[in-house]
Length: 365
Image 1 (cartoon, rainbow, N blue to C red):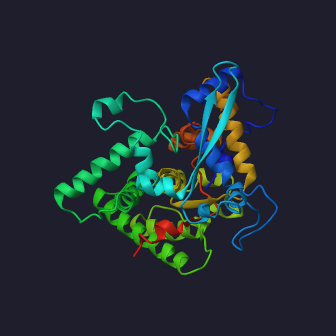
Image 2: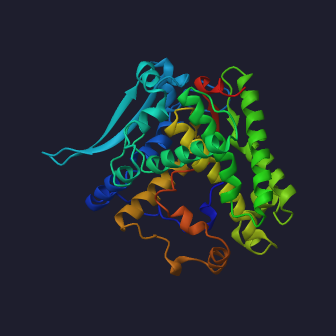
Image 3: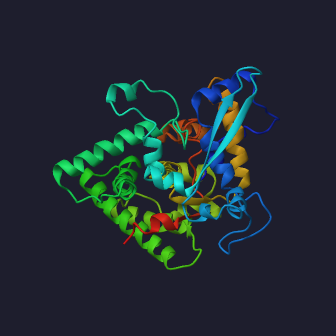
C-alpha cells in the first residue's frame, strides 16, 4: 500500500544530497535500509523467476555466491568516512556460512558486538555488524526480555539452538505486534486473538512455499487474506476493493466515505508493519528472508523524499500551503503524513513478494 495519491510531488525538480545532508545520513545510520531496497529491487533485465519480471542485484550476486539463496551467506553495508580525504564510501561486507555458523546465526553474530550489561548497552552508540542498523540494539534488548519472560513463565519450551530459539521468540512477538500497532479500535483481547490468526495465515503461506521449489509468496495475496480477517473483527473497515480499485483512488472518495480515513489508516499500517515488524527484522537481523520489489519508481520516490528530508534537517517538505482541502481533511483523521516523512520508516515498504530461505524453513514444522 503506497500513499503517493495523498502527497504533493516532491520530485518535480532535480535534487541532490548536500554535504550537510550527507553528514546527517551518516549520523542517522540508515544506509543499510536504503541498500536493502536497492539490493532487492528488480533493476536487471533477466528474469530468473516465474513469479516476477526482472532480476535483483541480490539474485545476480547469488549466481556467484550460491549460499545467498539458502540463507547461509549475508551481505551488509556500512557508510564510512576516510579520515584523510573525508571521502564518504559505502563499504559492503560478505559473511560466509562458516562465520555465520560459528556465531550461531546472523542474529547472534550481531548480538555478540553489543555490551551485555544494561547500562553499557544503553550508552553504546555504534552500529554493530553485520546489519549496521540503528534499530538493532533495541530489537536485541526486546528479544532478550521476551525470551526471559517465556522462560520465567514457562510459556513454552524453547530450543537449545540459539538461532532457532531467538527466531521462535521473534516470530511469535512479530505476529502479536502487527495487530497491536495497526491502530485498530478493538479490545486487547480481540487483538491478541487476531495475532493467532495472523500467525496461522502466514505459516500456511510458508508451508505452501516450502512445498513449491523456488517458490515465493505474493504479499498482495497475504494482505488480502489478512484484511478479510481484520474485517471479521472490525465491521467498520471498508472492503479492500473500496480502498484500492481504480475507480476510488482519489483522496476525495476515501475521505467522504463513512470510516474511510480510519480504514485507510489501518490498511496502510497493516501493509507497512508487515515489513517493519516482520519482514525487515527477518531479513536484516536474521538473514532469513529474501524480498523482491518490482516497482522501481517507488524506490526513486522514497529516495527523493529521503534526500529532501536530509537536505532540510529532517523537516517535512510537505508544506501545508501546498495541500488541498481534501488532503488537509485526510491528515486530520489519520497520521499517515508523519509516517511517510519519518526518515527511519520511509524504507519500510510492502514488496511484490518474499520467501523464507531454506536455512529457516527448517524451523517451521
